Image 1: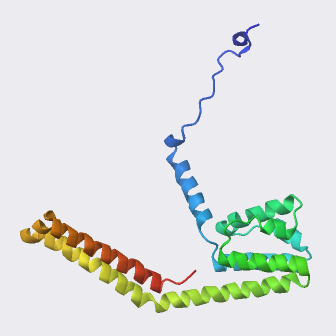
Image 2 (image 1 turned 135 degrees about the vertical axis):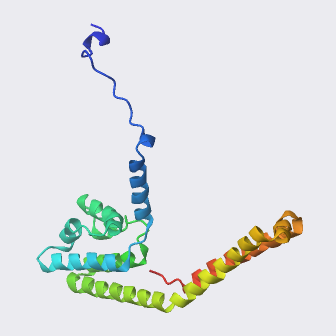
Image 3 (image 1 turned 90 degrees about the vertical axis):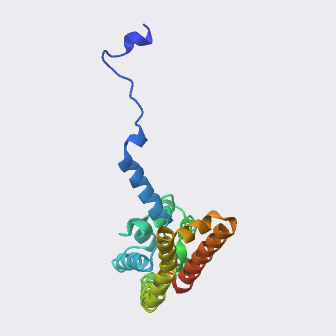
Length: 212
């Protein structure tokens, strides 16, 4: 019998799903990719360390705690997923931790202590507790720097926005100013001013921005 005769009556070939017709899927994928690119925050990593410490004090081994304790924070959970996958594949803790790509400085500190504890031995719970305390202190220091730099950030916003607003106001109200960008020299001056304004904004942002 031919293939056509074996096909059930009324069956239809499934049509591929047009992902462009589902904007919610595209938005969700972009949000997930953006979260994966974000560095793990100090407080989120500290919370994961607390969960590991509780599991260890509850009688779990280090491998069991790392395999079963999934961080509540989505960024930390995504970053540490290769670690749990490596442990499920019977790799050592050091080899599994090496699979974590771009962990960020906070998660890198936690992983370094975890690997050292697995190789040297000792109280893993106490070592991980100290990591959590260090990470919380980092978060407090970062918040304090942001508060102290609030005035500098406000000044950066004002010094960047006021020249642009004045330029827009003069161009809209003054014919002579509006004619300046139409000449080569005037266009060069406006372009130079915009470049210097943007450079000052990025430089002041670099000065007042603390590492999270």
